[in-house]
Image (tube, rainbow, N blue to C red; front, top):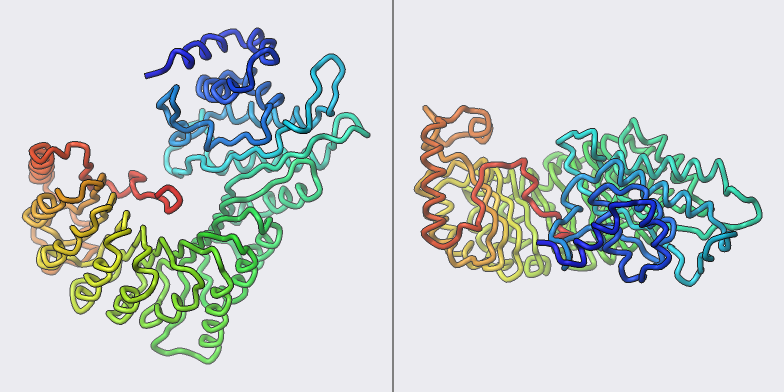
Length: 493
């Protein structure tokens, strides 16, 4: 439903030339809604002029494009329109080339001048390609080109300094885009258009390039560093980590494939690990740590003991955790603060089950998001864990995909989870009943690759749906879709 104010605003924008002429006469308080409607309806002429004449110090996509009192549509949950994004950038460029006082127009007052354009929080699905929308990389590239052009071209009228604008973005960089982004970051230094990175995601980037990029980023802006598919190893990580540790406001650090064989440690490997731990102790604001696919067997206590503050999100997928690792985590200060926990790919079916249950017991009061994909949890282990799992009364998301659970086990989970009033999403496996000729216990690879009996699974889905309806929980999503972007980012919890 749209309010009368929203409908009136949409009508005003139907004739774009007239709307642009009317902007100086409209109350400043209408500008946020004007921006959302213009962005939504691709009123590019108006959108460009809105950015050009924006009367507030901050223009934030996260504030303006979310669900609001006038319109329930949350545009940040959609890929942005190419036309709308280009219009915003054109408006920014025009603003930079407008001096404080321009003949024939109202002066741009420095007190109310746009100082920050915050373009962070755009959807980054990386899946669907639509020529009418922009991916996160497309948006990054468009802003980067503007930075380079601004530095090369300067202002339209020499001697009249433009009002500087800080542009906050989330940067995604790989080998192909590294040189381009490095040039953009260099161009923004000392430029009236200053590029400021909030979240950095670097994929398959050589160590020296990663270091060079980190050196160009503003220490006061960076919130997250996410290094993926870099296969750093402890040696590479020991080179990079001091450059990351200078970001004192960093809240999220995501590292992957940090290999170092603790069963046959070398002198160099031990030295690198100790150096890594020492650098980790420099972070004062870290709240999320992801060490996916890193060999941490028997070393979790060393890693977590160095941190200055308790973590709220901890991802340890495929880290070969031992029972003593889980016991330490359950007793540590981190457990009682955890909102998100990912133990995917760690075998929790044997001696790890009891310490895992102890960890759940410790985190029950705060846990919102629990990911247990491919943890070898069969019915026996799930049923033994349910009394502790259902104590997590604030839990919103539960991921169990790739575990050898039967339909009977899933039904038991569905019935017992009725006490978890906040639960909204359960990503469950295809029940073992729906496979033909499974070996037992079935390896996760078999569960992920073997074909299922579609007719049997259709009956399972129908029965689960009926049980949800009967318990008054039709709003809870039970699904096998692991690619549906259902897992929440830590900052959205």
